[in-house]
Length: 625
Image 1 (cartoon, rainbow, N blue to C red):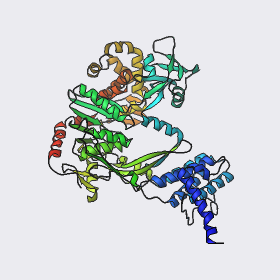
Image 2: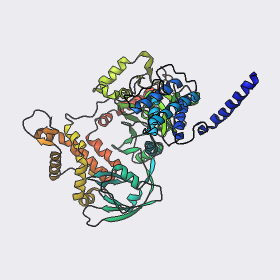
Image 3: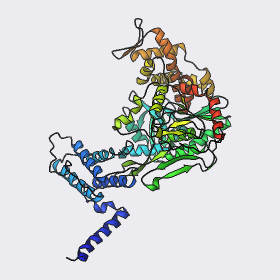
Image 4: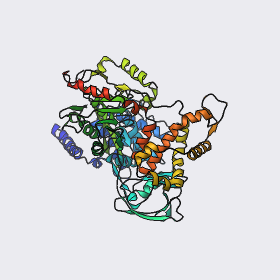
């Protein structure tokens, strides 16, 4: 055979496959029939990883791990893989995606033929999860149902009737209608019990049942029957579903005549717009300085973190940079405008639950000496993910780059161990936040020590270390508070209080939240009712103990211990009362009044925060290591 005759067919085949590959028509090269989507899905995942993952990857290792995931899913102690398509014990040579697909197909069909009861969809999911586990803790598989929920959260809205609810004694109870939503406009109230949906009983529904029945496309209708406290006859409503915003600003309010407070719970598509609306409102109330609360904010969209960071700086200020082995993911981001808050003193609150986008914002504020960062060392997530949809509406989230703060810090903590070790690393930190920060600083190598614009030391390799450390908010004994929360006593207490005294309470307080915040207190009869409810769930008042004691799931306290500890419980219940009457945003001003040591300490630091700005005005040069 001549060389020309040998090469021509191979070249033609290569050109055809290349055209298919470029066009993205994967199913042309995937077997048709029952298993097509599963095999297509496997191929999609490997291609997305190879084409986008920020670090070096081995298709050989990805394939091997996918087979090991398949074997683990079969969970057959008698399984002998030697000599079968599941055998990965010897040398494996996978050169490209086509090799990987063909070998995986052999293993897949082997299982389908020899283990006919196997759920092949779940088998492929197990293979995918096993592959992704070799990358980093944030490259993950997301099932179709979970994908929809996450998309709603980060899109910042969903479609439905607009209520917050809870299941109490098998009955759907409205916690609060979402302001401006369809239910709110119809007059549905906190405390209403939904007993029927579309002429079918709703008693005994699970949370998933409620969501399935009440959510739906904008413009569609649903009939609900409601029992309202002290109304003997049920009320019938036809609710037209609409867009319901999922807000990412938990609360904004004035702490005093010139201090504004904004709490952001995550960074979704609407966060920057919500933030500016909150800022405008607070400015109209006289805000001259801002506390930005990013505690327990796990992050979200990088673009939203950048947009909010820009509001604190003049045009041209470096906000963040990203680096990857793929040049298209490398970028250096500078502020594109003069920020609305560039001249306003700011204190950012953080803790071990602040991650990713929260660390970008707080890192930029700290690196430029723009304000104080106060609280406890942050989580330490310096990786950026992108989400890719798969053939069955599931998704994978792949890490595409690392991000660096303006000084050049990578704040990602190590992830050499297991995923569990990584996720729960914060549990192993010292309970003394100052000791944790001190130990961290002592262990950081010189290569991870950086300087702010004003010359202060900052550190990479494990989160943002705050400028001012504040211990975790605790009491001398958390037992009474924990028992109340675990048993949902605070919620049931407030619900019963409003059922009994709701009309009287609203007549006195509903039009003046600030007066409620400063003047309302629980009566002696209210306190007796609370004590009775706590005794029903395991509290015992005794005389012969020296400290709070757990005995057979009961909490034993002396009367003196109870009297010392109960103010936190009553403060939290007052905040829960505010939530159920005025809405979720009103919970935080009240709860912060009673149990927020970090916020209390931050309010003492304004002189320090304002003096930081003088460092920026000092000619220290640009940010440097």
